[in-house]
Amino acid sequence: QAGTRQTLLFTATWPETVKRVACSFTSPTKTALLRVTTGGTCSAHSVSLAACASVSQQVVLVHTESEKEERLLKILRKLGKNISKKEVEDRDLALVFVGTKVRCSELTAKLQKCSGVPKTVMLHGDMPQDERDS
Image 1 (cartoon, one colour):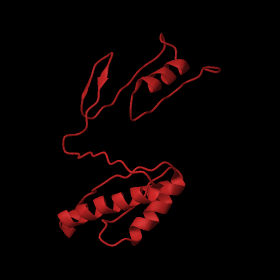
Image 2 (cartoon, one colour):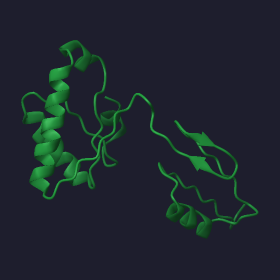
Image 3 (cartoon, rainbow, N blue to C red):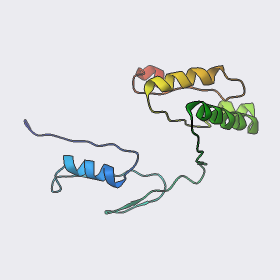
């Protein structure tokens, strides 16, 4: 229909702040809410998120950007040592999230030059679809 608005919200998390933003753009009587979750439980009124049991998560506190990169390299090199070359080629080992597309490109270039680090590729929104698929 002309003049109607459709609002779609995609989020990887569902904290209270995101819920409030979603509610500010939608009408409670006309909202269809679809939740897709991995791990945890989901009901009509709440979501209890949980990490996949086979995924290892760790929190490392660092104080500077250089310390952050040094720690990341240490973790990735340890991953590279603990598995065979065939395993490195057969599966993905780690996901590293950064704040900007520029930082994604910079970090990928650095990691690709480092010895002992598993194969590094990047993915961000400015990449053409064919590059994302390869």
